Length: 102
Image 1 (cartoon, rainbow, N blue to C red):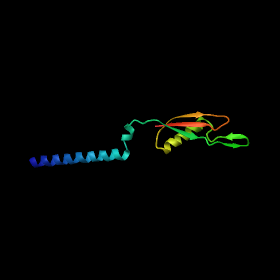
Image 2 (image 1 turned 45 degrees about the horizontal axis):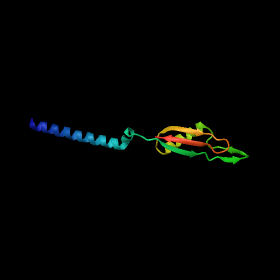
Image 3 (image 1 turned 60 degrees about the vertical axis):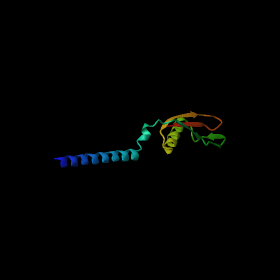
């Protein structure tokens, strides 16, 4: 009877250690800690890169929807989450697009 209890205790201890190791591997593999950390907002400016053609200015970023799409793409490239965007349209100059990523 004592031998059987000892064997059961060893098996339970081994299972416990294996479960702890498995949890540690899962946490490291899926980078769970980054979901619990507080993310700060980063401001990124995207240039419009406008050009002059036939006496009118052609914009790469024409409106707030274009600015938002550019911001989402930039945040994705930086492996951050899109938070917000600000579009400032200018008539005689290049537009401004400011992105906020978390």
